Amino acid sequence: MLYRSYATNYISELLLKESNTSLAEKIKENEKMNTKLKELSMLDELTGISNRRGFHQYIESTLAQSRQERRLSIFMMDIDAFKPYYDHYGHLQGDKVIQAVGKVLTTVVNAPSSIAARFGGEEFIVAVFDLDEKAVHRLAEEIRNSVEELRLEHDFSPVAQVVTVSIGYVTNTIMEEKTLNQLIEQADLSLYRAKEMGRNQVEGVK
Image (cartoon, rainbow, N blue to C red; front, side):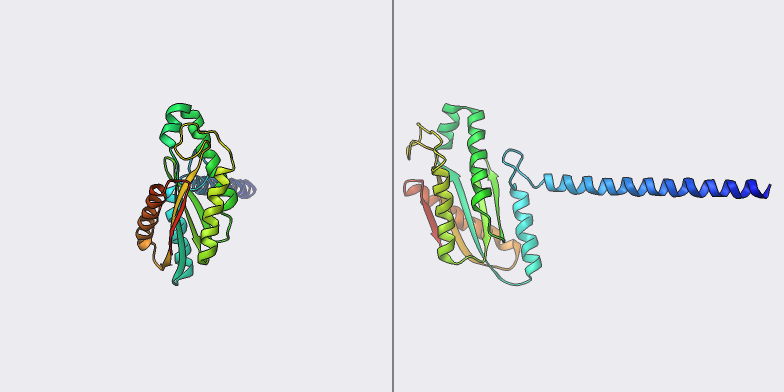
């Protein structure tokens, strides 16, 4: 009788341990899944680069880690004459152009403290921390040149016979993420000036 009681308790303990192990594994799997879903929610589905939400999260976390004022450059970028392209070449080709521009940004924007994101439609945004003025302008020109050198046909552009981009940028110091929108607005104004000057241009505010 004593042996049976001992055996029963032993089996119960084994079952409990197995159950706890299984539960722990399931919790771990759920945590991994939640992390993956969170990461996916910050990526643009079409290009695979960050979306607007991921962009803001990156800036917020970088500033939180720094806990000090940082020099930040914001680039706003637009694919020139994208609507005529979309209207004449179609939805699928338009998506391919957006993906191609996303790949350019992935290749060119590779500084340690930087991020490139799709801001919406044919508009992209780039943030780079701690670059001097000359390096910022060089980076903007490198992005512009790299897109042009893709030689993607665009017979309906008033700028060139290939797909091009216009870029506006601004550089300033920042300490809190809440002031980011001001920089974005200034970069957007620079982008507007680049378009007014004929597109396929880089225009900046130091």
